[in-house]
Image (cartoon, rainbow, N blue to C red; front, side):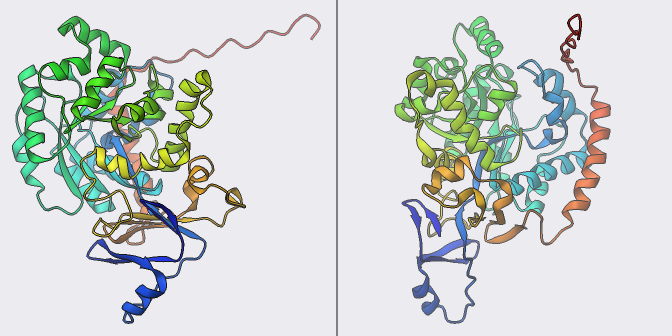
Length: 434
């Protein structure tokens, strides 16, 4: 069974060559047309597009649990010290660890939003390429330098797609923000920036500019189809209209909303208003099926229950916004995100012969609510098998993970993170006589 743009189809096969889908059609016809090829039959499996993570931080993989229980705006206390403690070797290990986790979770593409680590982003490109993961590679250009060189550096690379990034609007001058956005527009690249993620960020923008973050980006000419705004959990109706009218895209990141956020992005409303959006993890956990489950659940709990909307887009919406539409939000819609002729052969083989799906009534919704990472038999990126039953077939994944654990502990030790330790509740005192 295949999950193609028109939905689920049976009795179909794909022909992959040179890293792309060359043909898609009836199985027996493709076999007859290519008698020199031995068909690989996969009964009980679904061939579906790989998940596309629209927002990630590859060099933060050593510190995920360090952010648990922390007040929402943690980049200055957790992420900046962690990334600043990295050198080239440890940054490579951190990024490759994140890439392996993403592949295990069914992601074939991730968008890295730029690192503050004092290393050349070539380290991240090498790590993701060595792991076999497609990467929208962001370079932080808050000082206004290095943008054109980065955009030209990766021309023609099979797995690395350059992008420019400014972490938040307050990190750069208005001139640099506008110029960086313009460079991306001219190059057909994504301009990545965090917008309206926390109350503190919104209030800081109001104090500095008299405008909310998205309003400010629009005012200075930095909001357009090239713009990929991360989180956008606190958009006013006017800002959502600006995003829709300018063709900008949003990364809807539901897990961070629960773990370290102030709100849930109004993804269903974005759909109704014509806002382009993909779905991302923010590096919280690289698990595509849990991400789409969180995407639907967050909408249901935050908005659906109050209005009696028990559907909240149903399963297909969240699959599309985690695959096809997520790739489109990154500017990679012509490259990946769907099972279609001419697109990159980035796909998953998902085992459907599991108790959770017996009997199956509505597979798209069941994939969102019931499926798990352990059903992913194979992950293929650019036509090459990258994982088989959770591990790479051509390099020692378990040995790498053991080494990464040791490296990560040392990096966190040197980083001197500033955690706000949550105070556990006092134990309940027994009543007299107990």
